[in-house]
Amino acid sequence: MAFKVKDHYFKKAKQENFVARSIYKLEEIDKKFKIISKNNKVVDLGYYPGSWLQYVAPRVLPEGKVVGIDIKPINEKMFAKLKNVQLWQKDIMDVQSVADLGEEEPFDIVLSDMAPNTSGVKSVDQLRSLSLVEMVFSLLPIFLKKNGHLVIKVFESNEAQVFLKEQKKRFKEFHYLRPKSTRSTSKEFFLVAKGFLA
Image (cartoon, rainbow, N blue to C red; front, side, top):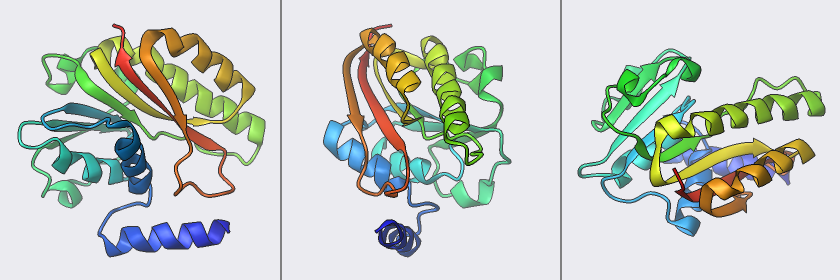
């Protein structure tokens, strides 16, 4: 079954000229929870390879903007057609304020599909994933405006559940989703948090 899922969404992404199958995860999340709207300003933390940028950019037109941050080199050519996308090659922890990204105010939406370099050791990978999740939550006062939304990938673990339970009070709504395009062998799920109580 895992291979069927992989083949279907992998081929679909190639046919539709998307850089990765992960675009369908965000598409399902957005359709279900109505995260992204016209004219939103969105930041994608750890955007590489960029399929979430491809999904968001046309949806926030005409006045919206998408900012992508990643430590990997920027592929300017690939995203040149997306005129409302700005990319930064930075370590997210080096961003002290949105002014470091050329912005004047926080974003309407924070996205993070970041995953650690996996070791194959379940407990190690879970802790590495949680470390990324904790980092993003620590940066929300910088990146996310009041009443803004967050979509973030999490590796399932007891520690992650405990941490997220503690963060629940920071948002008006807290939802969990495992998108259909997720491989059956994957332990990931997505937190969709709406209405940041900054």
